[in-house]
Image (cartoon, rainbow, N blue to C red):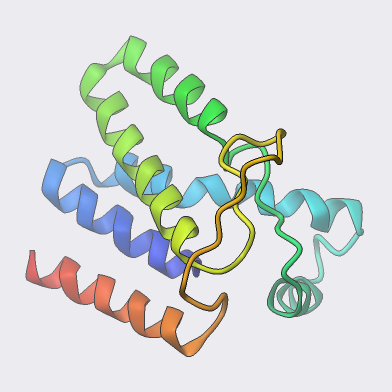
Length: 143
């Protein structure tokens, strides 16, 4: 799913909980693991090439942070320090999973174990995904 869709989900959760920073960070930062293949392929500083690769392949770069294992570990750790922040963080993280589960790119929610894979109904980097993202921003402004 577009990073902007994750941003919109974070904004919605931030508005509902009153904790924008935590909601936005947890909804968006999970995509940092997308950088791993770009580092391996030595294109990390070539934005044009990174976008080309991201749009042209269905080889998922969703890995360690796109896992319920990381979700439970990070959310629990944060909740130890502040239950409210942990709950908001968990909501943002779950929104990320939900959005990634509805696009048609591979999503292995128990990474590194790849026995369970989900693929959604919205085309990855498609017009439908763009429209869905715009709808999410609309929801943010309505809520």
